[in-house]
Length: 317
Image 1 (tube, helix red, strand yellow):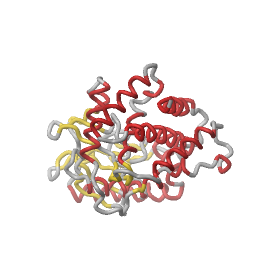
Image 2 (tube, rainbow, N blue to C red):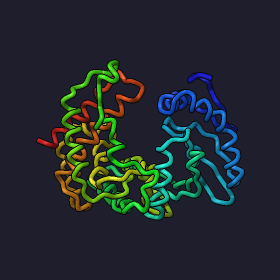
Image 3 (tube, rainbow, N blue to C red):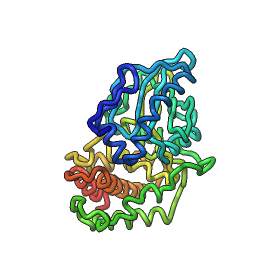
């Protein structure tokens, strides 16, 4: 079996080769080979458990397998699976701890099998598509954060922020000499900023870790619903960093500084967080995102990622 193989796991459900390729890069060849053999039996058992009929679909290219189904017992559902990993366990834990607070409903899950059954958000339209006004979208994002944040009831399976950011905090270009060349002064400066923030934590909380315009969906029954938490523990201000990178390409907009500063004003006002620290967290996250890109398939074109980082650093001036 290779990355070009077409794998069918159900009627009308084929796994795109690019999806399998991404899994192999992230989880390793042997893990994915084993898991693909295990997957049909796992799906059959869980569909039987909840009387789920899977709908024909082409799964999106993500780090998870996302499928849709219908059940006379539990309604319309989303099944989310991946090769077993700490990332899946942390998402399940975050969904459990944040249940009922504007978060998608987790119906059933198993960390060991790395599978989740989630209530399907309907119609599921993204904030990205429904709200054009940037200030209004930012206010919705801030409200989403406030609804999610809480003191962790247990740290098990959640990622401490320092661990989450290791790609930047422990960046070593010598370890991977075939990576694209980047200005190491940016990396070092952002890492210094990050260590300063992490060593002086304020308002430590359960964090979503990936709040942005495509992870907030509209539900006819529940209003704005958030999906796909990463499950972190850290300072609340870090949450703003992902938002400041979105919509995709936002840091490269001609009026970036004007809009970014307005966003920061809104966040500081609604969240009650220190505005200067929000700026520093935004710089830190943008550079961390660059480091993640460098870890992914050893990319040759990182011009957008570098542009995002440089733009975010302008907020410090």
